[in-house]
Length: 181
Image 1 (spheres, rainbow, N blue to C red):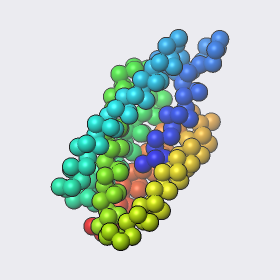
Image 2: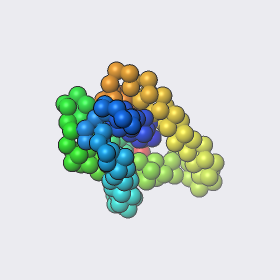
Image 3: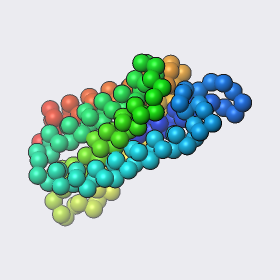
Image 4: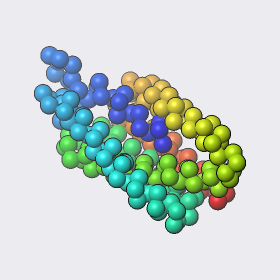
């Protein structure tokens, strides 16, 4: 999940034109570009926060393997769709808001599902140790996402979203295929 959250921070410098230069990506390259980029972040985070309330409940009532898979594949799709703004030459701010909001909702499935799965695997006696070790995935995902997105930026900012999104979807297929719940 965390690797697909890094591309927006990596590509902001490309989306927003440098002071006095006429580059960037509309609508983010105008005088209110920083504000628009910030509001895109807020839309994602707000949807993520709201989604966490519902995802925790859904994770308790649904098959965790399926719920986690749907969340991962959905997150991958909406990460890719943000990058498709580049490939499809989209400059409508509402497209980016919509993709970020839906992406935030799918991202919210991750933490509640993973906590439940790890809790089922290890029980109460080792839960603190295992969760501490498991939580290293946030740093590993952030590092991997940063490296992947920054290396792909030279090919066009859309690739910085498309490849992490595809990797997320592949991980979702791996979850449905191999996760014993």
